[in-house]
Length: 391
Ligand SMILES: Cc1ncc(COP(=O)(O)O)c(C=O)c1O
Image: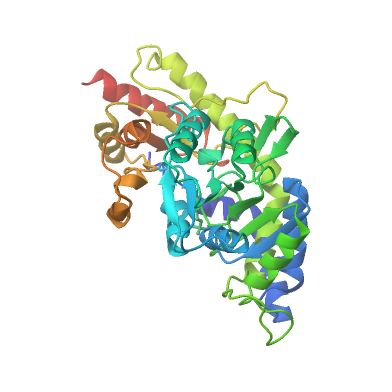
């Protein structure tokens, strides 16, 4: 049985009629940049995420860049983030000339560890290097929101802005001090990615910035059109960060199915958990299954499983064996960002973020999508059991 890591064709087949009609509608309108479709999508995503404003942009990476720009972050500033994330999180900080300060992750959720954040902040204060630090940038990895209450509290104490990188967590919920809030709705700003493989993916690049702050929303709208105020007058130095109408129209169709798809992902994840428990692999300590820390907390979307990530010391050999069997898997991410060549100038070295480094050696993402069948999941867990039995 061939089981791909991701099967977007199956999803397209399930919504083809609705989607094709919408694409033809946009072609007939010949309106391609921003416009009514983008505005409607912004309203729908703002409602879905429980924020006042949503600003459609060209990608999740650009959503991060434009968010930092809107807060005036650049040369001479510093931003604290996790080293266990997609490159774009730290890349955006560096692109603006600011310095990235990494902070280790929680070994269970893989998200920024608030106690490490506190340690880093205390150390910066002690060594009088706190001045340049302007923001914290937590990432909601794999579809589970970082522990935002202590992060927000620390940000408040130290006067820092908070940008949530919610690229992998559209619609995910966090049960906290403010009640149950959606990913991207807790900090000063939140960012989303509509990269095709995301839970809400377009047919090209796209992203969005979420905020409750009217001034920031206005500034973001200007920054995405070169900083323009009206036509050919420029208040800021912005860029071309526009979302296009075709993407917005496609995403609006998909938005209508997102709730069902998220539920199906959770069901597939629960099925995996049960199958792994029954296999004896978890009890034997050979495989660790993901932990949904907000389950039973009153949050319905306690996890949206953008990825279902297991952990094992035999990761590379297991991945190779599954590949031989035709089972696709991925490693998000094989190298902690502080060890990446392009960040060498930050002066970090191996051993500085041991939790992140260990995760990079052990994590393995298995196929998870609404169309994944019970038989396919049996095949995957069976293949993993066979691997460990044959060692
Ligand atoms: C955590 C995280 N941040 C940022 C991004 C960047 O999004 P995009 O690929 O839409 O630029 C991604 C997407 O891969 C991501 O997973």
